[in-house]
Length: 90
Image 1 (cartoon, rainbow, N blue to C red):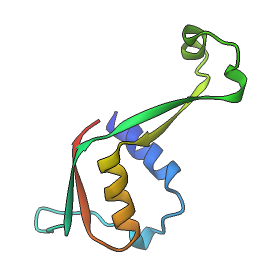
Image 2 (cartoon, rainbow, N blue to C red; image 1 turned 45 degrees about the vertical axis):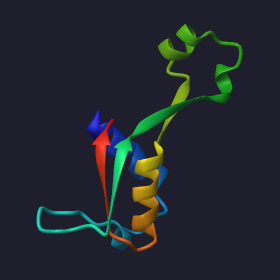
Image 3 (cartoon, helix red, strand yellow; image 1 turned 60 degrees about the vertical axis):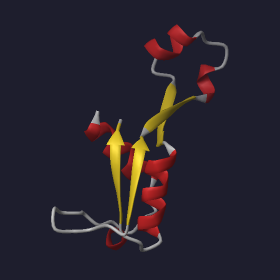
Image 4 (cartoon, one colour; image 1 turned 30 degrees about the horizontal axis):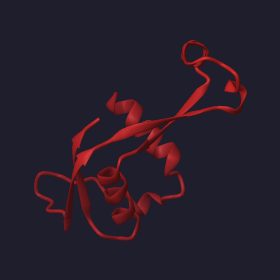
């Protein structure tokens, strides 16, 4: 699940330049710590119109978009140049 979340974050936030993405280590203290949940919004694809939920799931007719307010805030702060970290669960 974590690798999938990281993949979706990278895809969803692909406009971030590599220089704006930082890896925090045990010796790094972020300016802001965002605590809470991370989640995926499951949005139906155009071809899912008229399908039942079971059909959408079996045909993978939806796209997962990462989010959750604390995760989004941590991402936005990093893009703006403020060191931040996220602690929570997926």
